[in-house]
Length: 452
Image (tube, rainbow, N blue to C red; front, side):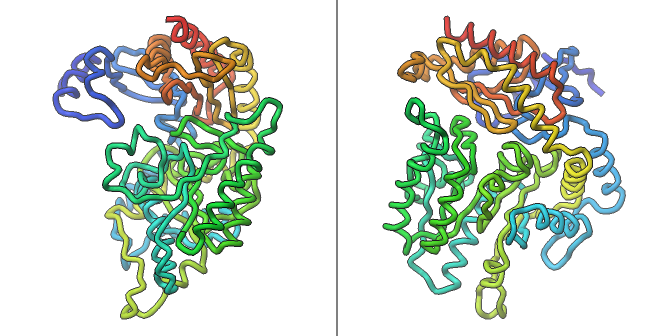
């Protein structure tokens, strides 16, 4: 077997790979980071240099790399069944996982439909909602309502529901045309205005849209509490409560995309819990398997399920599938992940960690080029700006966030900013001293990035 080092693997990579969400030309000056192994919150390259994974490897890792309990669950399942078609067949891990998800999810969500990615789960919710109304004979319902700054994935239906021009502008001719309503993003609240007051005020535009378009709308889709890829924009749970009431009033489905914010990220198991609401469709992924294997799920109600339940000749079946639907290895990883939540009092422990993150970064709020340090549970975002008073942004071409990324890598941390928004979304096994390190590195990187 060929001996390996950082440089050798990088050269081999650049000859054959095309990396996601990357301008490959950047790697002429920005070296790739080859990773040999991971343990806990740390990643290690072939030279032995370690990087603290502050972003949970794209928001998926909950309980650390190479977690022994999840490792063991996958290894055990591997001895019995690696995969089987889920059309006409079943297996114990997918049944157990479905039972547990139904128990954990907001009340009324009683059916699980599996896929392999977050985007696919969103596609399922969109198609299922549309098809539901078609099955009921309400043929005019063909549209969806989304929020500004939203992001729901990269496949065409999911991409249509997003509102980040960087991702979707090129593909506009291929996309559905949603009705876009202003986000309740509390970054734009008035001085002295509370998150709850601003989110309540922002809801007026959604109410207007629903009143006007209700007869042609299938569903409203939102990321509850935090719009992650849109810049870690945050809002108050009161918006979700008002939205649930309005969706009921106007007979429109509510799709909660909790792919990034579910499983404890916002301080509760699911973000919707903080508004005491249940959506009609709940999309989950990323942390579902603890960051180990691709698996996502769309949960829905029995009322939706029964609208598809009919004789085959009626042509009402939901004929949607993925080859690896309900993969037993992924389901076993998910079951081990839920077991850790149950046995280790994770949600309560996270409250202590979240408080430490807030304390460690508190001084950054006074930085002359930081407009806001905002936090929801285990997600913290630091907004770099050119002008603190006016919130004027730096020109995007200057790539100030990239400067922070480079500095962090040099100093042993993986921070991957969203534009000029630096954020922490670490695994839940992070220690207070590791949080302190992240705060120190981020602060130093921001100082350099904003003075160049």
